[in-house]
Image (cartoon, rainbow, N blue to C red; front, side):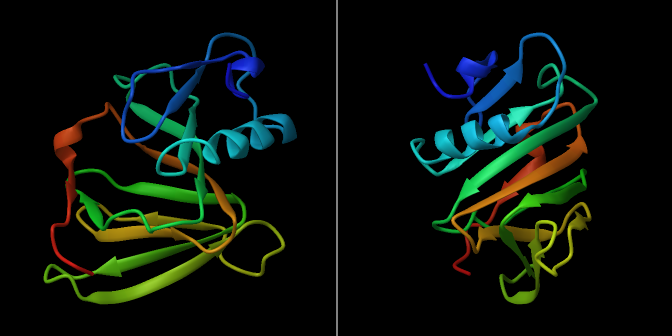
Length: 160
């Protein structure tokens, strides 16, 4: 049993990273949940785990708390019709932005409270970006429109 399952969460359908859902009771983030999320991120392939506050992939709004373990950056990608917002809880996360030809155009280092960095960033739809933790873990709240549509995410095939 995973640390998240021991808190009453259930592993949902496999997506790009393991996603856990609340079975019942209050949907709240506390120190125990953050510790369990980071513990799970240390043992999964790819180092990314999410706890979903929405009830399933078909929901109109997706709220997730995600832990990314330091390692290779998430591949550059864009969401054709959906924006997404990152709100830092803990650690440092670099957002990098690219043009259509794959050239880096900008970056922003986000940080949790007290880090002296921006806490929140909204990525517009159709914007090439990647995420790269600059601390052992980057833990953040991500919010985006649902329902889930795999065709909305385009992953770059260019070297960046």
